[in-house]
Image 1 (cartoon, one colour):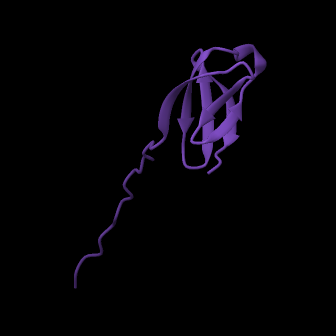
Image 2: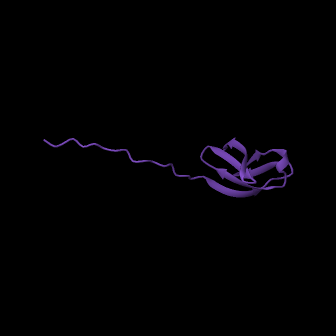
Image 3: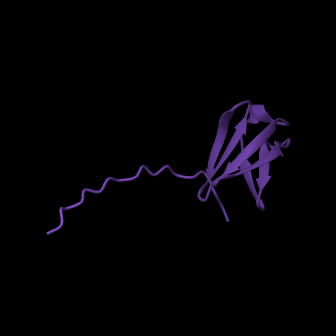
Length: 74
């Protein structure tokens, strides 16, 4: 008879496959991404920002912090 093996789980780290796109916030405090428009707080008008888009969420970063988060539209 063979001795029973004990298996250990391998640690699984999720891979970040989000897309990052630099944008400029317009005068109506909106950014455009993939034919959709997403809003941000009014104090960020004309700021440079970064969109981080995953499969189901869009995060908008400015000044090294998340300023808005939306469900992604397709």
